[in-house]
Length: 294
Image 1: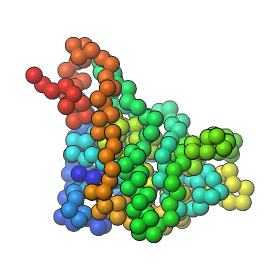
Image 2: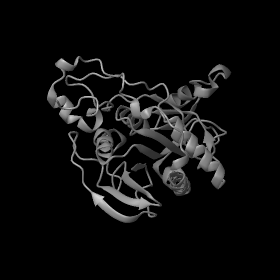
Image 3: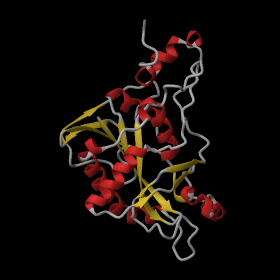
Image 4: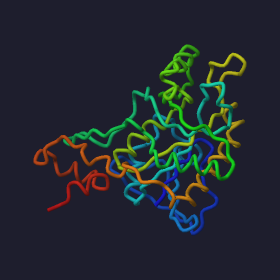
């Protein structure tokens, strides 16, 4: 099953057929909304609006653990995410999708791991977005004639406030030298870092289509970001994200293999005899294959 997490402005996928809604109970509370399951081509797709229908959750309030756990429970093994962002570079024009490949997490109030409470695991986040899914999105964009940006760093801030001017300029300086051009900050947002971390722990491939709607507040020739400016430009970006995701799903058979599905293989540090059974039971969809019941 393919999962889609819709960001601001992407609250449904109207191309799905045989649609049904499911409610998934999780150890981490309710997901953002009911999950819509339907068929696209010959693939089953699960869709979830990140902020809930009607946009009810602040970025910090989004129940990311419940969302990713629910997808895992349903059998999702790949997630496409769409997210409204601010552009941090002059050459990243508004509404031009960015297929980010790196991230910097500046959040401080999020639950960004499934582990703890007697079970310790450390997964690699060296490449936080699935390289196979990124490659698929980039190839699909070429095939359908869509202009996208290949790579760049997504800096994730806590929000809900937008950046100060000093913060905005400081983010732009990260990775700005020629020696670090591959990690320059391309966009700024408030959600994707937490999802990427949890998806990796759940051994789910995860890729983001970042949709620039503004220039934050660093650009002297552009207005500072406001909710009004975001909404004004969001429709075009959302339409592109929907088109790209649906086209990529139809080409999923051409996706290259990756290692996301074995992220936990060497991640556990806790001795088996020390792990409480309730910790394993709580995370059964995530860790069950590593700790089968005798």
